[in-house]
Every structure is written in structure tokens, then in C-alpha cells.
Length: 174
Image 1 (cartoon, rainbow, N blue to C red):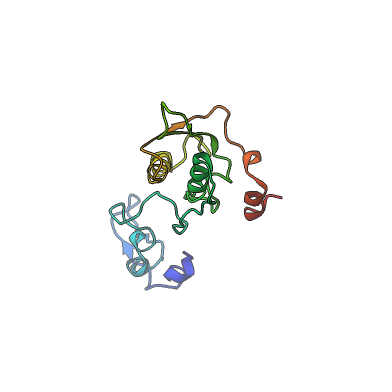
Image 2 (cartoon, one colour):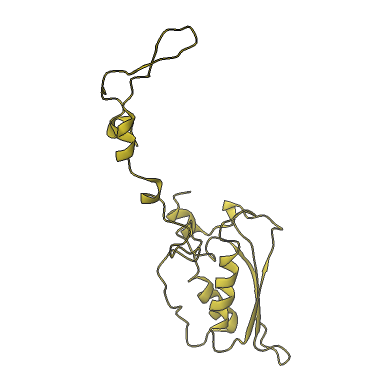
């Protein structure tokens, strides 16, 4: 916010004199009209409170995955992952290159367990708590899946080179 909008650059009332300075004389105030500060917008008008309904889940609108009729379980999981978005980047996590491996066995011993190995854009990612939970919940919504495990790894570390071409175009990196 500009000082001009707050009215701090406007001349205020005549400077007030203070008595009792050390040299026995009177000191002048700065001459800035601080009454304009009471008219300034408060911090809470710009930043929602921590008790609001803010969440760190995907900011993109929810979309249902589309499966081809003969899709394998792994293809269905990938389609579900394409509905999860990083809250700060308008690209799904699969195209962003955050998914390193999807293990969806079609064997008799574990037909309904899926394991997703993924990373985050950085170890300090604000979505570190919410994004893996979102992935797990969405994968477990598939009819063929009873249990999903999401493992986070930073080896190798994510870099923008892991994004596919479509993501690079959206983010104007090419």
C-alpha cells in the first residue's frame, strides 16, 4: 500500500511542541499525521485467518478420471493421479513429474493393493502433508483397490526437467 493512499504524505496539523527535552528547549514532532493510520486497511482484510476454510488440497477443480474400456489397473491409477494438482502449480502431479512409480500388481497374492512412489517439488513443500493423503484417498476410491500406499522419496530430487512437454508449455518453460 502506498504512503499516498494512507494520507501520510499530506500535511497534517501544525507540529506539536514537546517540553522537557534534555537541553531545556522544546523538541518538535516529526510532522507526520499518524491519524491516517487508523483509516488504513488491516492485515486481516488481505490475509484470511488461519481459522478460515483454507486447505492445502488441490486448487484446480475436481475432475473425474476417464478410463478406456480395456484399461489396466495401472492405467486407471495414472488417470486418477492426473486429477491431483500441486496447490501452487496449475499442472497435475503426474505431468509435473512427481510420480516416480506406480505398482499395481494383477497377481493373486495382492490384487487390490497399489503402491505409488512419488516426490515433492522440494522437501519444504507446503503440500507435504496433504498431497500424499489426497493421492492415497483418490487411488483407494477405485473399485479394484482396497488399499493404497504412498511413499515419498527425494532420491532422485525433483527438477523441472522431470515435467512432460505439456506441463512445460503450461508453465511457459519451453
